[in-house]
Amino acid sequence: MWPNTTVMSSLFFVTNVHHLSYKQHPYYKLSFIHLTITSLLYHSFRDSIFFYYFDQLAVYNIVLLGGYEYYKYLNRDSNNIYTSSSLINVTSFISVILLYIYGYCRKENTTCIYQDNCHSLLHAITSIGHHAIINML
Image 1 (cartoon, rainbow, N blue to C red):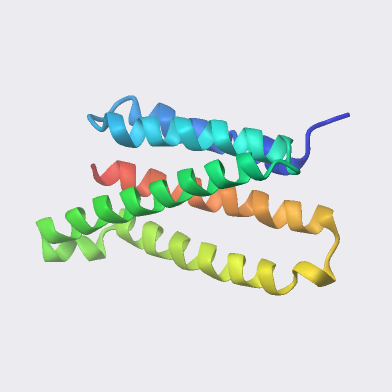
Image 2: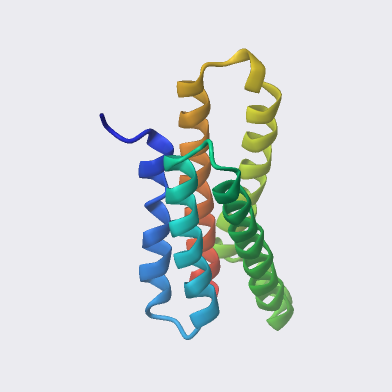
């Protein structure tokens, strides 16, 4: 049996780890390694509440760290908000929020396959958004 799409899409975060290999941010890189591992474990063993909480912790860590790096980037120069990396970052963040809300609201009315595909899309968009942040470093 093939793994579900959310397990496979968790591997998008490996690209962020690779991108961070060329930057001087070891904590951000370790955070993405942690996120990749916890995401793979959680989406492989969905019945484990233990993996769920570790995955959520990794997600919040990445969101806060990425937000902090973006905040520092904006404070360096007020014109940084007009860069393509900034546009990609803001667009991906808004897209993730909207997709998350949409998926949460439709949760009871959809099949599991549909939810997995939406969540996989969420993985892809967040990976792209964090690539934009990594590019700013």
